[in-house]
Image (cartoon, rainbow, N blue to C red; front, side):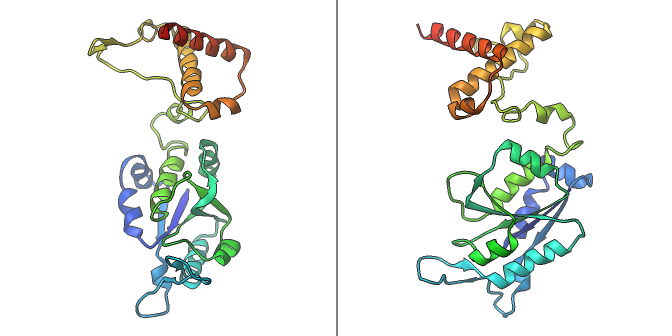
Length: 249
């Protein structure tokens, strides 16, 4: 997969992408990462990339010409058709299934805005999709781009050592993950649940499903409302709720 980022701070992307899962994917040629700085496409000596918005108001906007030229250069760099994403608080909120779709693309171009945003005509002519990390504002789109790169890269086959790792994580099945434990068996008087030490894989799986359902019910009722429970899952969730009620008595 090829991912390009259009950004005024290319070093910010390149430096962070050297580490962890993304760094290994780049090193192993599973992912190619390119950066495109609009300043390289300016026409004046000062390399101006921003200007005042029409109609007045605070802040500045990224100028059309340098940004458009950078996006078009990124598009033209390879023959594969690219999907261009603008990272903006006005975009649709990204969920795990969106990352899964992105991970199946051959090429992705992420546009990291700065200042108060970008000219609407760029969005109309050059942007395919607008996405947001959530209902809050960052100083620029670079951190959002890095989040997308990490989230996408780890879903590409062969990037993780164990492909089951990504399939079993929170949100992949529409639920939060179950609690996890490692050695030692007892820490500060708190013991690993007996079922996880039993070696009974059927009971372990049952416990994990129940905990995943229960944790989602407790922490993310919005996800629970969207999730379609099977009859078995409904029984397990009711078990969890009853057990929690007994703890409170």
